[in-house]
Image (cartoon, rainbow, N blue to C red; front, side, top):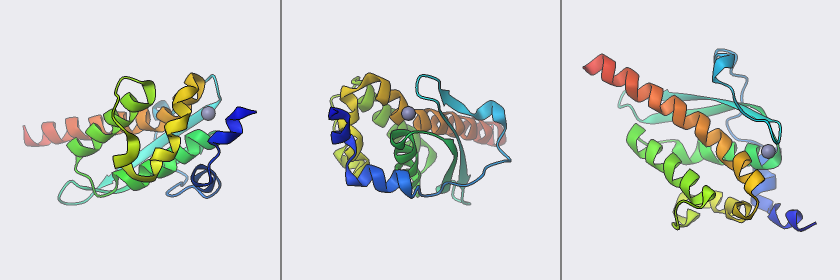
Length: 150
Ligand code: ZN
């Protein structure tokens, strides 16, 4: 099966030993993002430091190797970013995966390993699921910030 070709070492490593995966019981079940075609589910938590830079991204949930690896790599990529930068990065990643952008994943680091997933539309949903979740959380944080300063 050609799909095995996708299981590069880097993806397997993140899938087997996901970074920043914790029980996030304080996150409402309403904020669980699901990909019913595969059975993946994920929720995320984003912590900001006093400069409103992302100090930590955590995720929780159950998913296939692709969604778990994507979530794990996402937590590492977004750490240290300001909110606008993180939102832009999430949009860029999703556009590349869905074919809406010809840009390369190269600049995003080891998540480039997921580029081969683009050939498999069902799997693209697995890869983008945690990014949809984090985008929602980031947008909520931006709105809260606007409320506080406005
Ligand atoms: Zn999946």
